[in-house]
Length: 325
Image (cartoon, rainbow, N blue to C red; front, side):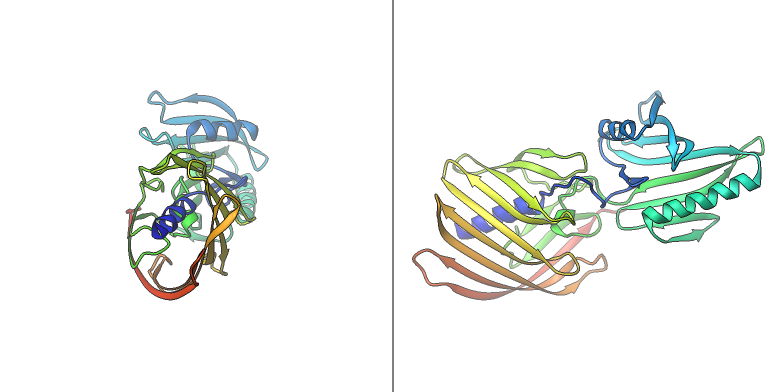
């Protein structure tokens, strides 16, 4: 029963995050550019872009607007199966003179650096990259001798943040944990980053791909969950309530400088009385090439009403498999 409580609560906390402004995704002029086409369209319209058409197969959508204050065209491409954004590119031009072309090129480099950091020059293009996006600025020659400036946006991370909210890096597909305590032994994620768990139902995601509400199917009905987060979009408190069993679980999390979970505390209430407390502290010892931990020394202290507290240390190892990018 105690193990069941820990596992269920961790699974819920691992895949549930909420934020008003997500900085862990590809962005267009400082605004999130990801997710279902309806959400993308609403975001663009709110930012004064105008939709003027789409392709016959409804996989490409065309917009006009201002790109850092200069008139531009925007093409949005989506996946035909998931209807999620797969890429976007902005076209500014045509330019008939090198002077105006170079002037605006330097201007866009400056503005993109403000939002995306440093860039590298490669094959005549300027590329900005981080864990969640790739942005490529280039000049394209037209048949009539004029030139266009193009900015290509490519999401590098998954839309659903179930894996991200666990502190995972890269496109994780599967995790197998040896000596699992505060997690399930086997975890699997879709290529879109969604945790595959049939017991987690009634999922409600916000437009940035964070799960804001869910229900966990249990032997006595289901549990409702609520969440609190810090300014860095990290889960710091999760409350799970099972009304049928009159039980409430509260999990609180603290983080290290690498944004990994340093410790977590779980309290279980029966009515208004605390009947169980579990404290866990992580000491990550090894990591893989993606930066995800592969060995962890977990210190655990456990107290249950009517029993003396207990302490133990568990050496955990895990193997991670990634989706091919």
